[in-house]
Length: 136
Image (cartoon, rainbow, N blue to C red; front, top):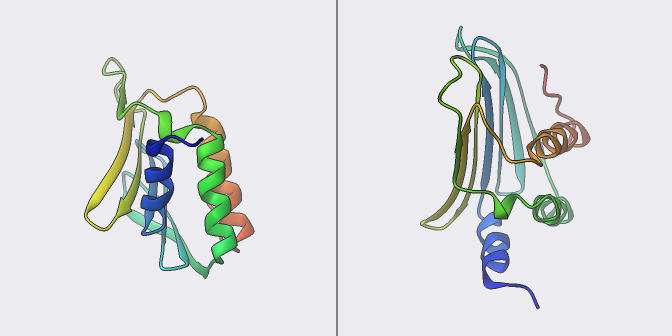
């Protein structure tokens, strides 16, 4: 039997998701999913320069796949914040899932959960499969 937190995670996802990965003085990207559309933006963090963007329609089947993949990767079990303040520069990330007026948010600064690289890889694949490329 699925726990209520996992069910809430899935219901919240249906109204929107945003994933942002920023690298100090480097390439960064953001993926927004809502209303059966995916928006992928690649930009340079220091210069605040937009380098590439792409938008594409996505099916309900793809949305279900994204939810199940993120659940399989365990992102709903992440702590709300990871941090290593001893590093200057580095990277940050934010995964936000929205449902009406509720928000589920995970952030990190120079530290991430063990499975984070797999989530990054999945986000790259998600963009590519939907005709968008994350240029890093």
